[in-house]
Length: 106
Image (spheres, rainbow, N blue to C red):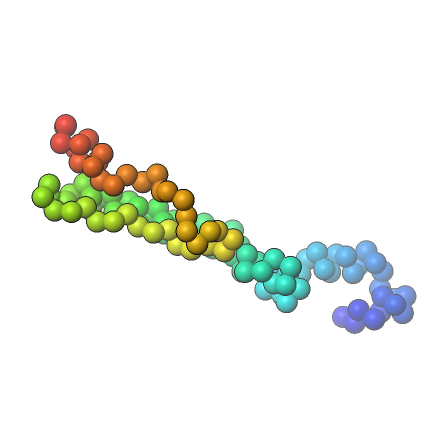
């Protein structure tokens, strides 16, 4: 497709707009406008979320089965995502003492 066809009168402005709106996210134009956020689609975000949830579940299992005199492992760090801060704010995940208190009361 030759964009000079717009100036020649054989390509309408509507067609140019539709072509630009439906560019793939890996195109140079979209990369320039959106930066690295354009590299991640819904599938990538869902996969990263699933990996984070699996890591939290494994950590919770390990923390709950750690002996009382052993130190609880550090909580997992979420996968970095484009557009998110490098230093996330305080994570609401417990340090393991709440889990140990819960299971010791059973």
